[in-house]
Image (cartoon, rainbow, N blue to C red; front, side, top):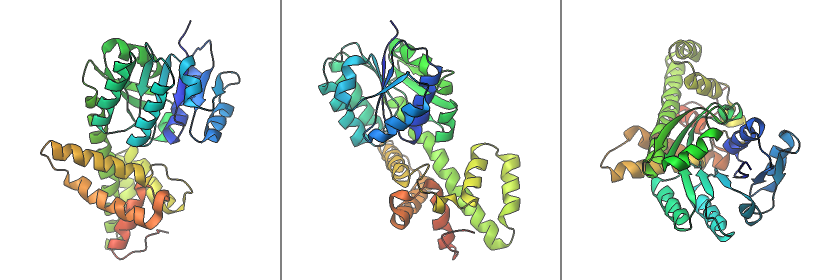
Length: 307
């Protein structure tokens, strides 16, 4: 019989990832869905093909029924709390935990030990890509753990949630999270660079339109997507952030911690983190990573909100 899945965490990324697994997988049993806010589980279930999912009320209710457990959660303390609930839910021997959250490498190592001590397998599997990419199965997965465990997880990534994977089989559990955090600095630095360039283009009289054309021609893809989002004013208008400031700050703290422990320095990230801190003060939890633009505008004597 095919393994039964339990999916824990249905935030911006988790919703799209889970939906891809449900729609593209061939399962004999329903996929169990759990989210702390139950309504999110219901919404995901309603958007999936009928009869393929089952919303559950607690982690304890799902763990005994599941063979493979996917988790994608926002913060380290939440991930560790959920792991504790999984371990308290009963015998986990032989179960595979696929941990997709962006957390500190040390946190992942602690989780792996806790699950291994109870006879479970763990694959560290953070993903690169925005929620829109998750919705269409175009993420990039980074998988680490014993090769046999990684091989069990791969079918849910390649051609399902992800367009490709970076295979770190038999590497330490810290490695994929190191890559994920360093990789996320590219996003953070990109938003900082775009924000500064847009402000200079406006202040110098060049205007942002020509800069947009330059980026479209030279840096298609994520640069254009973020530039469009920034110029549209979405950073101060959207009701819910796509890349919340709290998560961006968490990533910045983690990677700066990694740099300090490695006797390295990330000065660009230090600048971006300072701007994110101002975004948090200005917009609270509704702030988005793209709101860095508003802070850079104010530093140049412009209004926080663009037109």
